[in-house]
Length: 295
Image (cartoon, rainbow, N blue to C red; front, side, top):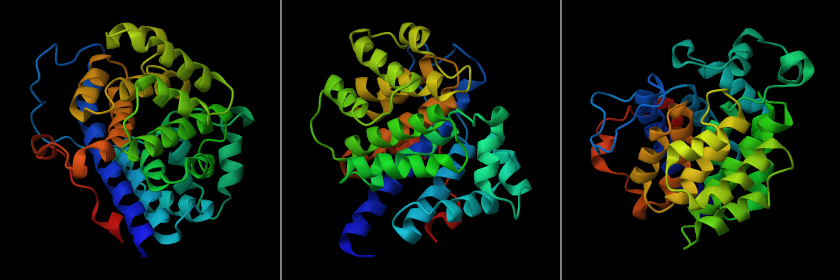
């Protein structure tokens, strides 16, 4: 790798680590919707195991490390090869290993009577890609769309992935930025539709401090769609964009699919942590990334 690629990989690995940590942290709250730390800043005990979002994000990172861009065929093959049924995969990705020798394009397009999936899986894995392309935000959006299409052919599924990747690219620049300006820049790259409308509403709700109230307006992943997950996650990331732990606590307090939303928020904000040094106490609970991810 040259120096530029090395920087890309370093940013993406920090994002991937932050995503995995958020994923495992959020899972401790997903089993009890509406419940959270209740103002007590004590970390959940035990090991925080990550889920499918982290595993597929590792595949995205591996393809970027190999090619410097998203090769869709290679990514589909990577998803199928690394599939672990114990990680809670969504239906859109579960079918790839069963489709060995088939065309992922036909499979993705056939979901939901030909509409394609608009689930949040593509968005959940997109932050490390955005961190990789933080020097070129339009390219981050383009590559995120390519990565999403392998499993999520619906425009809203793609839009969610684009929104998260763009947010991560902006965050990874580590420039001082206001929350409203942050979301305005994201909006400049997200295609029209329900995800974009939700991010626009999230920007308007930055004046609200309570995550439960905001989740009531934007959704918090209870419907397992990009439209119901990405806007709130971006609200939390924008609201606490310089405080990784506070952003994850805010996200977990909302209830709903805290695992998915904390993974998104953690992946977006980890590269903003000075030196990429995530809180040691949090890391002590996190499940390590799989050994193959650095190959």
